[in-house]
Length: 320
Image 1 (cartoon, rainbow, N blue to C red):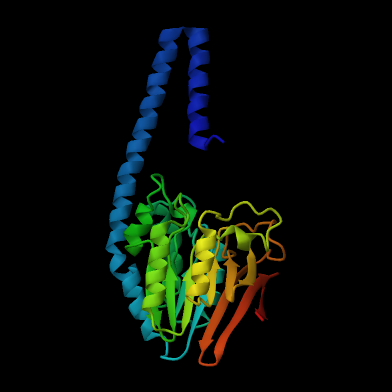
Image 2 (cartoon, helix red, strand yellow; image 1 turned 180 degrees about the horizontal axis):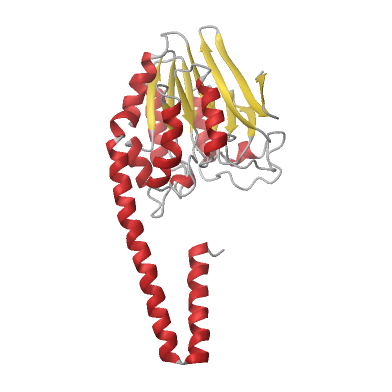
């Protein structure tokens, strides 16, 4: 399928070809040269603007770097108990995102994890204008983010995301639990290096509870909730599933397919939380609502609660 930029270039060449046919080759070539010159100038402007935006994001890294936020999170939890919130797929919807974020912050969690797609095009400008204001509104609660496919950016290198957060993966202990997030929105989705990072981070922790965060769910989980399972990753999904079970992970949080769903495999709970502002996906069975998830880790177990936004009201539902 052609992308919009390619379609625009094809349309430009067609128009110039028609002008050359009607008015002569010289006129058509002149028009094409002018149009390509304007396209080049626009591209150069975007390059300069992107560079300046990245510089501004780097200036904010002292506060948003994952290691720094982990310090803040640890100061907000107890040794044997903590509360955190999981949500995902804001997609730059500031209005709904603000409602979700502020309600999540009112739970007074140690931190919030966003499972990705916080903006639409992965630019520094979007992060500055549509993501940072939302995180500022819930300060001092830190928000960890696993990058989604919409954070890739024009060069698909997650440059703006990394400029702000310093990395595209995190691992830290907070109170009684270990938290690990990584980027599976790359072309490979989950590669051998990702599996090695997960195993090292999970086995190095002495915490009794373990939680993992990524953006794109594995296909075996997608098949439990989607009427059209085609967006989950398949390569290395069996190795990923086996690793989660072997490391005794309590729960894996994901996004990408807009809605809510949860299922248990091999003693590990897999949860889709992708309803923080993005348009809801009709393919998700019984998951068509904006929401966030509250997780309370206590010495006697884990309590989970889905908080949905329905007709202007917040509806709370415990997860069995």
